[in-house]
Length: 217
Image 1 (tube, rainbow, N blue to C red):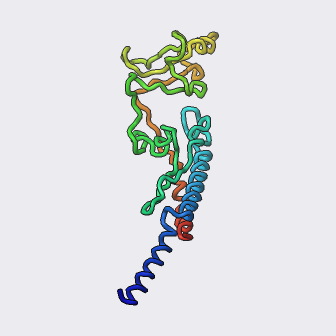
Image 2 (cartoon, rainbow, N blue to C red):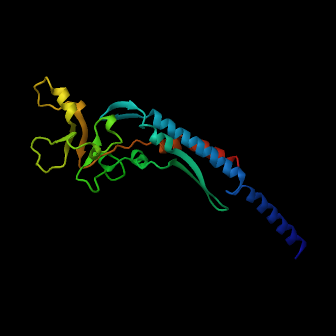
Image 3 (tube, helix red, strand yellow):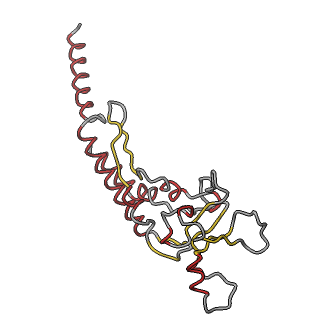
């Protein structure tokens, strides 16, 4: 091997050593990914807290209930080998997180509308106190099914009314109208969820900062 070849080989080895310092396996890359994950997840949580939401319960601020979605936002470094660096940021363990982010087709989103798999109709809570509870869990006779006028007898859609609540609200009134306060569940053939993105805007808000942070390596 000539002298020049030895010098070149030594130079290549020195460069390779320097490059290896900044491969995804390095502490510098791990630290950068941790910072990026923390920034994006924090931004996503702010979006969830501050998002204006319109629903059958009225207008309110905040895309969460009992903190389920909010508390599920996190990040983790999945792979930091010599060729790739993978950072996962998003919701972990909440099945409806993706639906809120992308929405369903019937409401202008990307995912299929929600339809019942086994039951004849979806049971959608009409009031907050019924959330997290199943209609089948109530004692027999507690809830009464009422269908819209003109619907077939075997039509699965309509409403489930709290019988005792209905009797109390209409005791001294002559009316055929069902008070909203007595409605426990809506029975629907499908549910349409509008897109309420919280993660994508977080990435976009931090895009320039992420690129700058990676340049420091």
